[in-house]
Image 1 (tube, rainbow, N blue to C red):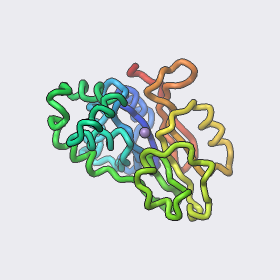
Image 2 (cartoon, helix red, strand yellow):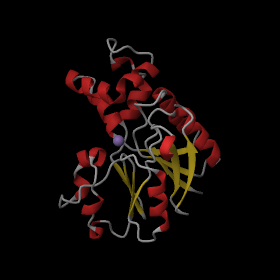
Image 3 (spheres, rainbow, N blue to C red):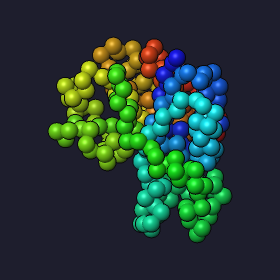
Length: 228
Ligand SMILES: [Mn+2]
């Protein structure tokens, strides 16, 4: 049994599928997907279809909420939020569902909406906390600030290790170059792994990599973007 975490797939379904093939995922493996399945990339619907298919086929997949799924859900009844979502990569997501902006997002398939609604803010394991963006350690109880879990940036400097109960944190949300992750892997004192290696961004300058973080070996398996 292996445990992998993947984050920020952002509509890159070919890349996601290719990474899954490299992993040769087994039914006793556990996959954690840390949010931002949608937006910016070409096939958000395809990514969610694949996740639902894996679950239906009996693979163990647990998924977290990202700020992009939050924007989608909060756009349904709030036009200002809808406009903001469109500016942040939402319109290509509607294209993938073949829904026009006028038709609006009420036409997204029921099982997809149900999937988005059921996403969790964070997962606590024996050895890890998993979250999309991060935890707000300026709050006396970082695990009560749900908004920060999907939006927070630049929070590493505020970490209070005494709040972590000896566990490490894995998150995404803040796209960065993969060499930074390699540095964190080498350092045995690393408390926080940001595994967002900029999948949806241009593969020039070593961006455009989706990575699967092996949570037991502390190694990564990478896949270059195949969607752009
Ligand atoms: Mn995000």
